[in-house]
Image (cartoon, rainbow over the protein chains, first blue to last red):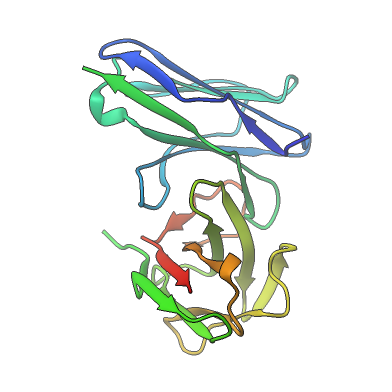
Length: 110
Length: 115
């Protein structure tokens, strides 16, 4: 089983729709969860971090965490073509080491 | 806004050669990391570094790899004898705390091509 698993893509949504990205993790001691956006050939760019169960909202982005189910998700409301990128889920346990998922490629069609 | 910088942006080398990838972390950060990403694959942790020593390293980080903070600003990754499979993007990251709750700031990456 992969340590961090993301829903397989690619994911395509029309402009203005909600994009839903999912991630599960295997290590129950994981405490910190991050969503990054990565454009092709570029470095990961942090979008959201979440540490507690529940929802965390930042503009058009909402992260959801359920530690009992070992599940974290990212919702993008009112998706824009500029949101088209690969979204990486990362889990941090100790000493700041981050374990990344394979990523989900999102395409937002105008 | 402070940022992590990396040089060179692209390095081409012959198999068996040594390469040094350079990073300048954000100035007040104390924890440093190297990650790599083979084309089309996921970002993989290589090593973390704090207080002039390695905190943790992955299975990828074998004897061919070493890290160093030669002065107060640079953080380097050396690959002693490059292999074809070392071709990848290498990202440096830094954070001001080793807490798992702290955001890591990533540099733009160095693309290493081994021929």
